[in-house]
Image (tube, rainbow, N blue to C red; front, side):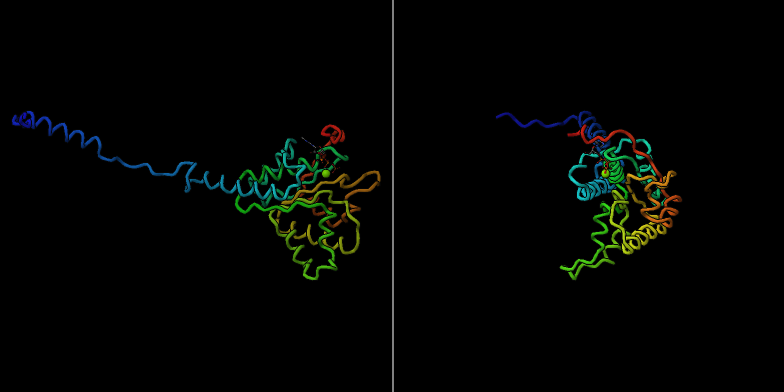
Length: 241
Ligand SMILES: Nc1ncnc2c1ncn2[C@@H]1O[C@H](COP(=O)(O)OP(=O)(O)OP(=O)(O)O)[C@@H](O)[C@H]1O
Ligand SMILES: [Mg+2]
């Protein structure tokens, strides 16, 4: 049997030891960069994306199926949405008006989606039509638990409210009062909202207008806070048959 090799030569041992020490130096751990990347918890971008995912789920839940593909394309509507993203409290109201089928509701849902995708803290939205909202704010004879004050508070306090066809409801003293309370609280608390209508705010020719439908006190508040954008063009419904 061959004898095991032994290292007797001091010079060789010294060189091996020096090499080992050099190796050890090179494998000593340096300062560790353990800052999270955008894909990891702790990084602001990671948390923004998480909030955006939740907000987009909420947006989808609030959006009728027909508008699930809606994206905002109108530059002025996009600019309003970006303002809401930058500073929620100064965005005010967005009022889209125009003829039937020009794409107002589509742009509105697109704007709400854009805001959701920004991943702001506390995104929550209620989207309704004025007719449905006033229906919900009526007495429900078969449902004594239905609390209209509670429902009105939801519309008043939700961070983002979209009232489609804001003028299209059967007016009464109750609807007038509810509309005023709603608009007035959102105005006072600087909460943004989006509205659509087929009507001009004020028709110079004396035709039906928002001032007549909603009342002068509401229109006065809107004149201070609303970005009013006409959505023009043909009725797009035949195009998307
Ligand atoms: N930019 C767009 N891209 C794709 N589809 C669109 C676009 N704009 C509108 N549409 C589609 O055209 C149809 C009419 O649009 P929308 O419902 O937004 O009109 P509207 O102005 O709200 O009409 P109304 O005054 O009757 O409520 C819808 O089916 C909508 O999905
Ligand atoms: Mg519409």
